[in-house]
Length: 281
Image (tube, rainbow, N blue to C red):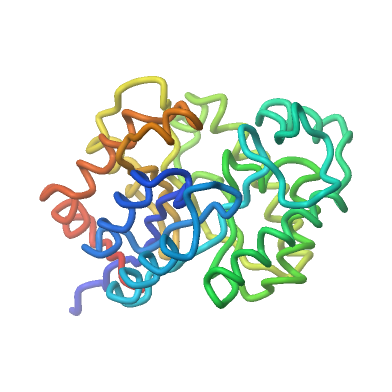
């Protein structure tokens, strides 16, 4: 009897463009075949044609690793569109306030659509093509009202891209242990329905979220992430090297270096092989 073929998953590093150190770490892992996807922030100061060209070069070496747009709609970043609202001190709202505003129906999906369309346009200008997929910084793509504007923009500007949902493929007992993850599951269920009505594809399953306030045993977490993940499931990760730019923008610092060290080490490919998982295109 022939052995079952390996499962191909997407191991996606979020936040390319947030800082030079994160960019460098992601490129290193893509070039070595330890990642097969990354999503790019285009509203940041650490993205530009040189950083894009370097990413395109290493992605081409890795059988064309997927490159997506990491839609950014939360502080401390600024919108590209002139009339985006609501803002705080000319910046996007913090993610909790944006989520709350969406839950209270206080957002305008058309304003969201216009901003996401501009980010998609800038991605196309930088990369010379539309993104392979679209996701969101701090999962903004899932938020009420935000999702409506985002899906409309993707359908208009990048209809061939798939969009990321964040529902986990785990037993109920494990899912109940994390209230935050349960919220993502609920929001993803709504998101998937709307994406289907729009005619956009989504990933079949998701893993990779954990409590970033604690120093992780990332090897144990990765084993958990891969357990039962189906073909084309997505594992989100945030590898990076900490630099002053990152420290000024994001509280996620030390864990990025822990993730990078594991993904760059010898144990990770052995884990993929043991689980019959491949990161091929």
